[in-house]
Amino acid sequence: MSEIIAIVGPTGVGKTKLSIKLAKELDGEIINADSTQVYRGLDIATAKANKEEQEGVVHHLLDIKDVKEDYSVYDFQKDATNKIDEIKKRGKVPILVGGTGLYIKALLYGYDFDKEEAYDSFDELTTKDLYETLLSLDPKTKIHKNNRKRIVRAINYTKSTGKPFSEKPKHDNLVYNATVIGLTTDRKKLYDVINQRVDNMLELGLLSEAKELYDNNIRTKAVMTPIGYKELFHMYDGIASLDEVVDMIKKNSRNYAKRQLTWFNNQMDVKWFDVNYQHFNETIEEVLDYLKEKRTNLN
Image 1 (cartoon, rainbow, N blue to C red):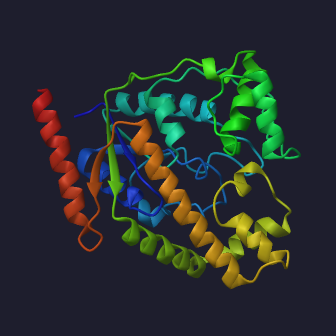
Image 2: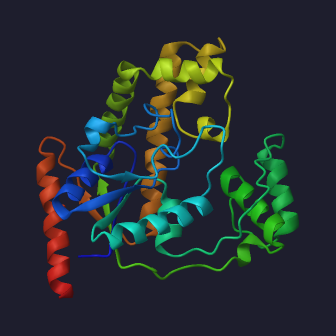
């Protein structure tokens, strides 16, 4: 058996369900690798598994931060490394699960981080202005001029370390014996599942969850990052109808799923499995058979 199992894939594909079933079968404990599920109170929009859905399986790094606090990939790498050590000392299998690819890759590949004490999101600057700033700091940058998230990260890295982001050491070797399991399905089916999932979130109380954040005037990174809250804020501001906002949430979720698939395909060595939604147990068995076969081959 691998030292660590990581379960990745796009939003809505079934990662949480698989992780819980594998944990029960393999005597494992789950480490959350979703950057939004670390926050208390952000439950429905982030699709966080509730106590009943967790089925008694031990979960780590869920609900560990207040929405007014920051939590970075640096923090995750440190916390998850400690959790892996604790889980292994108990003789259990650490199972990472989440759609935040950078979190998982930083952990498994042992990225070296210089903690950025003064991270700036540069909200007052346009993406065009930011890109020009990046070019002045790092003329060799290969980051696309419209990729604001990576531009901001690169600028903060340079300001923190004094080194161009393009010269940051690359990590291509795993520091853990890890098996990365990916769940996927055809694009149309995934989009249908995502659309239905958004409808289910509304039934579960997404409007109330977002309204409480809105009324308390919480606009932190934790709240504005996940899909759901910022879109609904447009409705509470009176600039969009509920139908328009729901369509926006579905569209943004579908686009996010597409980006996730592209990222995992390009950035990590993933063993992909097509999800059988009607008979999910068959997907679970396929994954278990693969893990057992891999363990046999290693022995």
